[in-house]
Length: 305
Image (cartoon, rainbow, N blue to C red; front, side):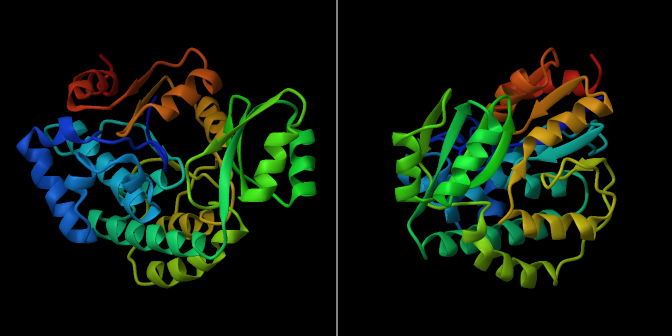
């Protein structure tokens, strides 16, 4: 059972799309995507610096675009993906919704444009941030977060939880961490997947109401609680709510293990979810599609070779 996974914000890096646009089919596709979202993603994926592509309004469309290019490269001669299911981490759910046949490419891009701008605007209302917490006792950490007014944003599995909230509260956590933990500040401008993002949820509800969502043609798991979702409309609703609720990637990995996953293919910009799989899905082969050179190995896995 081969499952394709799509990464979330923070997986991008300067110049990561350079190998992709070296091939005309991918460059042409990226230019079409750029026209749809009204952002020069060719520029941002090749020459823009780290600060520029860290901007939420740029990062999210850029990450989804990379996933769409990888999907294009993974299609078989019949234009289909030879996979047994799909899941996305945070904004990667938008990529996954396209891969599963829930949203068209144009609607997925419309959604991510609205999502990214809404989250960027919400983040600008208050000075907030995020930190990764590695190790320690989860119950002790959650109790400490409550004391500080912080929230868990991503339960990534393998002993990693990303927390979010006010910058001064994050500083206090770093100064006095829970026993056995390491606190690593993340370079993001906002407390994503927390109450601070509720204004973006309101905006996305309006965008989603105008979309046509088909039921998925492949099994797709939600970040909300790791369960399978059989209704396209329900999945889009979950994507909207996900903006201000925690990402439960830990539960997603448990669900994949229970379903009998035998291989993972991570779409570009790949690496983060493969790393989590090595800790949370030990012994399961995983391929990170970082450049077009990785497509052949991924297709071999998907074809059972």
